[in-house]
Image 1 (cartoon, rainbow, N blue to C red):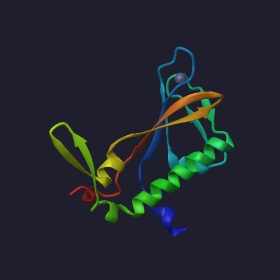
Image 2 (tube, helix red, strand yellow):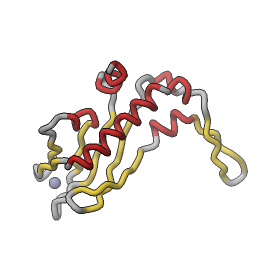
Image 3 (tube, helix red, strand yellow):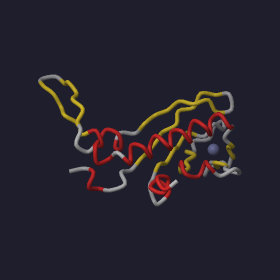
Image 4 (tube, helix red, strand yellow):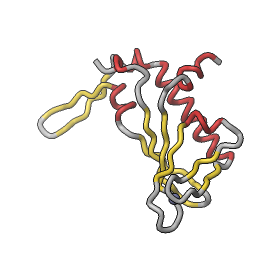
Length: 131
Ligand SMILES: [Zn+2]
């Protein structure tokens, strides 16, 4: 599919989570595009503990990647949309694209029987998204 190339070609959709190893403060990170590989493992840079993703988790992350692709493909539309946020004394209008790409997403998933917070970092495909 040609639409997949947009994210594999240099797009950054990074996920990280805190290492589950007792006493380790390492942050394990990997690129979402890597998880499609069958032998994918995420390795802690500090204690070198390896994490394999079970099929359920991998499926969720793959769907997350598709969602990011869909957002990316709609950047020109979303770039013209704003979200109104009510604050004390008025209203702030946040461009949708900014909301989707600059605010870091937190997803909580089950990893090895433990609830783990995954941080998702997505960078816009082009700086022109932010006018
Ligand atoms: Zn570790």
